[in-house]
Length: 72
Image (cartoon, rainbow, N blue to C red; front, side, top):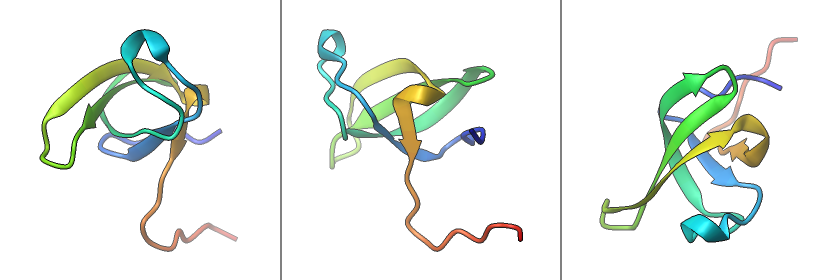
């Protein structure tokens, strides 16, 4: 599994009911806490933060808004 970069846009792969988050919610990686562990900020459409969570790479999928070029 590839590392997730700082400021990457990610989505949750599972519900986190204790934090009020559900599968598919989109956030931004704002800090790399350890290898494979990320602090993710979740904001509304107005840019207001409604949740912060420390998450493992297995709980996230990185989203891409442009074509991704992979080495052959």
